[in-house]
Image (tube, rainbow, N blue to C red):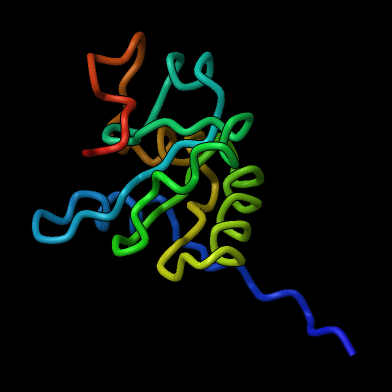
Length: 123
């Protein structure tokens, strides 16, 4: 008998902002939208790993750090969250409502071309 699908851990945008802004142990805010979407508007502090190339680059993600996955609405990020959890990551959550909800909540966003290194995973 197959097991029912596991619920995807989800956080709201305010909780995500608090966790990503934690000075002691900041969560990694991972934007899985495409580059053109990222340039238009993004949550401040989000790094970019587009879903279109995600599988080729996911091993670059830390396994010892909390990861918050964000997209535009929460659909793509939900799929990526589930994929990471199935592949050995344990502290991963989907950001409900995505970048749209983040901006609507008045949380800090950036627009335009990213500064050098802004979209990159921290080394």
